[in-house]
Structures are given as structure tokens and as C-alpha cells.
Image (cartoon, rainbow, N blue to C red; front, top):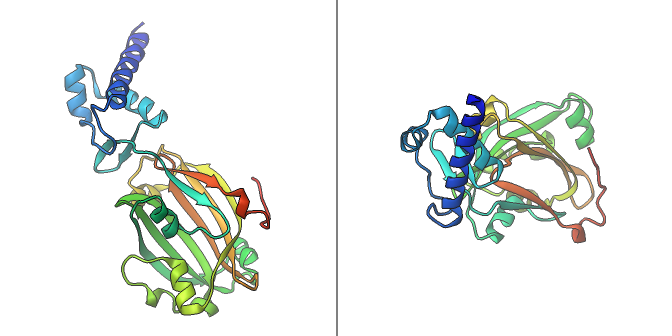
Length: 249
């Protein structure tokens, strides 16, 4: 009987907060009161508040940034998958501010998957780059890019502050990558991703595994991008994908 009362109470709180969001009492992007403040206001324990917040997250009404708090959702950022659209261009077209930071860059030996994607022998040297991306200063995604080391070994030295990877490839290497394939999955974040993206370990990520080729169809980049599922969604432009090999998982 007690379980039913608790469930009813958190649903009531969730409905009340949802109503306040829909009527504009809490504006898009505004921070909600803390769990402690809400538990005091509603005269319930924090577990009940967490359950109410969980319902609102499942409905897409709010999102959390680890260490900062819980905020009212704005419209989800649409990440468009097409042959040509890139992160920086995509975000700019959505009238938002993109940011990219190089977390780490190192030369490593290609494992079997990376070698196959890039058309190399297993163990061949590849440049591995960890890139953290933001939208309007919010943690949005982290990408692990692999590029043939012999061709792009000096790429990290060209990065200074926020950057567009493909703009650098075009400017310094006369290379214009085109998306060849993308495989989309969902999974929960690991500990590093939780820290980078400041998200909950229970919040699923959108995982996009993509291969890009150059003008001569030579593999240029294999990249695994992990995007916060509570902030972004995917749109596929079929008008630009007619010549691309589609893969499903």
C-alpha cells in the first residue's frame, strides 16, 4: 500500500512540474530547483523527487548536466546525417554556437575494425583523436576519430582552440571527406563519457559509427561519435544519400 502511495505522489509531482514547464513558469533552458529544495517544498524524500525527475526526463521535458543541475529542455538539437553536412556547419545552420576541443591525439596501431574500415593492414599506424564538442557551451558529444597516420600525422599541430576538423583537412591537406556509411546504435555511457558529457550513467547515448572517404574514394576517417540522447536527435537526408551504401545493425 505504501508503494502505491509513493508512486502516486511522484506522479503527482511530475505532473505538477510538467504543467509548470508547459505553461512557461519554468522557461526553456531554466534551471529547476535542487532535489533538496523540491523535497522540502513538496514535503517528500529525495527518492520521490528523483522518480518524478526521471519521469520528466523520459518525457523529454528536462535534462541534467552532472555537477550543475537539472534544466528545462529546449528543442532537441537535430544532427543531420547526409553525405556532406558536418558538425560545425550543422550547428551553425541551427542558429546555435558549436565548439570543438581536442582532448587527446596520439599515434597508435590500428586494430582489426579500424584497419578494415581504413583499408589498412592490422597494426598499421593511425592517428587517434578524441574530440569533445559543445553546442551553446553545453556538452553535446565526444568523438574518437581514426585517420591514416602517414597522410595526416601533423594534423594535431594545426589545431588551436575551437576548430572544424574537416575545414582543417580541406585547407591543409586538400581533402574534402564525404560520408560513405553510418551505423547508428544506442548504449549507456561508460565512466569516461559520463565525465566528459556531464550526464547520468543511466542516460542512453546515440552512437554513430561513420566512415568518410576523399574525392578518390580512399578512406580518410573512421569515427565513433557518442551524442547525448537527451539533447540531440538524428535526421537522415535521403535526398543526399542515394549513392551511399546503407548499413543496418
